[in-house]
Structures are given as C-alpha cells and as structure tokens.
Length: 308
Image (cartoon, helix red, strand yellow):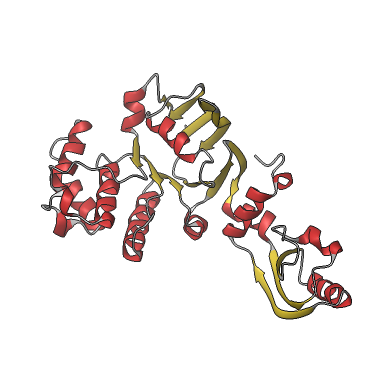
C-alpha cells in the first residue's frame, strides 16, 4: 500500500486550469519533494489531498483511503502544515494542541504534546497566548498541530518560509527523525537546497502538470552535470555555443552559463570564444545543484518531454 496515490487529478478555477491530470505515487516511508514555481498547482494539489478542495476529475488516496469517499480515515492518516499562519487568538499553545488532539478523539495526549513542544523549542511558550507569539513561534505551533495526532503521512507546505535559521535546523532535525521512524514526509519548498539534502524523490510541477518525477540523485545526474560560467570583458558568445546555454541570454549580455558534458569541453569552448575575439573577466567550472536542474526544467520545455 502506498502512502499517497494521486490519479489523473484535474482542477479548474473558472478560466484557470490549475491541475491538468496530475498522477504520482508516494511510497510509505519516503521523504518526497513537490516542487514548482508559484502558480504551478502545488497548493491546489495539497488542498485536494487535505480535503479542503475537491478535484473535478481523478482520485486521491491516503494509505488506501479515498479523501472523498473515506474522508475520516484519510484525514486521520494525514497531518498538514499550511503556508498561512492560521491560529486561534483565545488559547495558549498547550490549549491549542489539546484542542487539536480532541479533534481526533485523543484523550490523555499530554506526554506526546510535551515531546512535540520540546522538539520544536516551544516548552517555554506552552502557557503563552497565541497572540503573543512571534511569526516564527506561530509557525512552530502549526507544525506541532499537524503532528499532535501522530499521523503516518506528514505534508509540509513551505514550512520554513520567512523563518530564522534556528527554526529551520530544529524543524528538519525533528522531521528527519520522524522520517527515520517510518513517517512519510511530503515537502514543498522554495529553498531547493533543503529539498536536495532531504528528499529521496522529487516531482516538479509546471502549469498544473508533472514535468519531472525521479529520484533526486537521478535528476541531478541527468540534468545538472557540470557548468561553465563565463563573464566577458569584451566580445559576445559565439553563435555556435548558444545551444549550450542553460538560460537563453539577451543580446549584449556578458555573463553566460553553459552546460558541459565533461571537463574536456572547457578547452574547446574557450578556444572558440577567443577565436571570436572574446576576452574573459571570469571563468568558473562548477557542478550544478538542484536549483540549476529546476531552472533548466522550468525554462526548457523540450527537456521534459516524456520525463514524467
């Protein structure tokens, strides 16, 4: 049984087709990344998964439970940390977590609440009113609320957006521990270094479609490779080298990022540039990361045909 099965899900908001037949599977125990630019459909997909929106077509299952037909069991298996800071201003942190436990019929849950608060550095704020907390502390409470019923599947929608380094490190330490203990994690983030270091597999969405779905290491190997960064003091990139550009440059641009197959390409490229009258201000050979892969896939449709 898979942790999450998404089958040909489509969703339209008036003239906007937010999801165009998304299909993917997240296996039990995976740390899975769901990436894409703003407007790609990530939050819409999570809203359907959490039961906050309903798909026009297709189906979504959480641990075998349909999120519509068997919504009680599906929601019990799922914990979602939303992007927005949503809180009740009338309760303390501990009261908020006790009430959240009550939604799932959990009594005498204080031991786990204490452990969650300790792991998120919330213990000192346990009796503080939610209104008195900083934005970062409120986000910690949102994470605690999602974990309070010990869901086997945890969805984190931009959990570290706008928070400090301390919270990011604390959160990832705790979430990584839960993943090692068998919890399935689904992460959306714009901090691609987080996804690269944490996620076993990654799906990339663009305009409501999955354009890449593979292991993180495979995506890096297939698309990233090596890169040659050039900054010209004089001259322009020869026409025959423009096909190697990762991002098409504007006429007159002096900085270019070229895709390399191997280190042997460097000498040939530099020779072609010199022959065209170019002089160099900067030359840098580097290994690409997930951010480079992301840029390539979002800006080069021809690269993703048949990938997903």
